[in-house]
Length: 263
Image 1 (tube, rainbow, N blue to C red):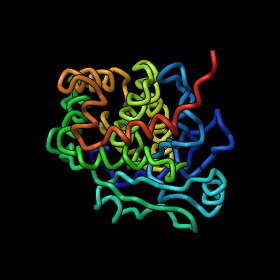
Image 2 (image 1 turned 180 degrees about the vertical axis):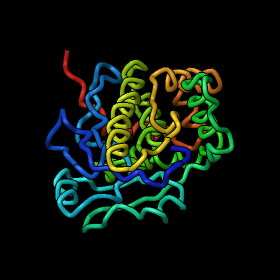
Image 3 (image 1 turned 135 degrees about the vertical axis):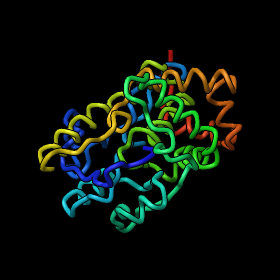
């Protein structure tokens, strides 16, 4: 997310209802990125890459569940000020923590105007991040590509914007169809709705959170991917431009895609 307008993204709802073994009650947008079809009909492996909102809220019980999943690496995309404000994932033996800040402008400098196309607004913010945050995005994808870091989880504040971009780039490099990539991104709208409902229930008078911070329309990610390809030729070409090597792209596919089935 480009900016947390409330400083209060603290929630206690479950975003993993369809997969109870992944239940982390202190999060609202934790989920497995696997299961989609990629190159040559090979599925993205489950249990290797997860995405989430901020993990600083994990309770002791949540930490036990988190450790049981086997997470080896946490990739935190938040701004340094957000990490300082909220803290980081609680540490335990065997967990590696990597903080990466893809440089990008604060959204408050370009606020969404009421009535303006929300998908267009979000796609423009994502394009800005892809332009200024190349080094951070490349580092994140490079970490995901290294099988020694798996299982890994990538997160930001709400787990929809910065995290959504990293996951979209990763899935595209794995050959996942845009329809699945954008649908995965759009799932964050459901998590945001649960968060918004929870926030309203615990805040006297409610909190006015701007629409861009709660919405993930599939169209926004589609516009972003289309225009990224227009500018670079392909997502892989953009990742190479950002600093991801051919060896890393090959490694990404080797460990995140199931073995091909024999004809």
